[in-house]
Length: 220
Ligand SMILES: Nc1ncnc2c1ncn2[C@@H]1O[C@H](COP(=O)(O)OP(=O)(O)OP(=O)(O)O)[C@@H](O)[C@H]1O
Ligand SMILES: Nc1ccn([C@H]2C[C@H](O)[C@@H](COP(=O)(O)O)O2)c(=O)n1
Ligand SMILES: [Mg+2]
Image 1 (cartoon, rainbow, N blue to C red):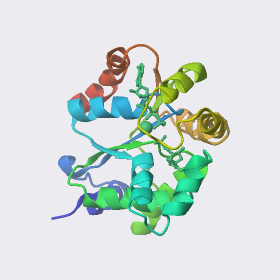
Image 2 (image 1 turned 120 degrees about the vertical axis):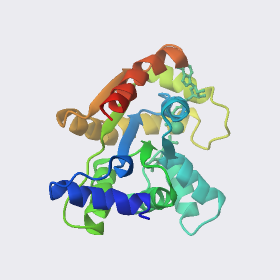
Image 3 (image 1 turned 45 degrees about the horizontal axis):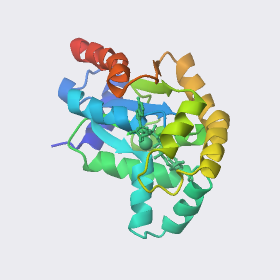
């Protein structure tokens, strides 16, 4: 049988030829974007519970590389400590591998793409895989949260992350404004962006998220 990655690329080729891919195999890709501490991971857990997605957090995959002392581990650690963005080929490779291994066809890709370079790299690997067709996510969620609230949440997170300190948070916020907002604007212009007001309780925020995915389930 086709694995998800094969069916993903086959699906793209079939769509290009005007052939409809089998419904259960068509991949559904959601990018989850927002500043540091905006609540992406927290809401992803709820989306997984309610809608059965596979959750791929780019940050978690990078932290796993650090923990496993892989060849890129030291570079990734330094980059994260500095609040900067890891080169796209490293991150995209990790995401691609997880997608290949997954039996699911619905993906929540959390914290990615963080830059235009991330975005283009992801499209490139898909188009290199088969034919010259790029791929777009089905949904892009943007958790829009005031900076003051994001700083407060990150400083209270208490998960032992090396980047949860005031100095690194300031750098991450600057990087978010400079490099991630253009990606968010790109998807807004493409009509793919769903902006969530990321203040209030976790449940209140999820009630803004729920109808987005519920609508796709109905359309089927
Ligand atoms: N609505 C909320 N109100 C208050 N605290 C929240 C809310 N949502 C999440 N939090 C808390 O804020 C912290 C950051 O949330 P989370 O880890 O989900 O953010 P994130 O967007 O994934 O951040 P990062 O980009 O740094 O990974 C966590 O400690 C989480 O429990
Ligand atoms: N696409 C990505 C995602 C994450 N990183 C690095 C830099 C981030 O500050 C850090 C933590 O990510 P988070 O858990 O907050 O999503 O990981 C990156 O370089 N590229
Ligand atoms: Mg997170």
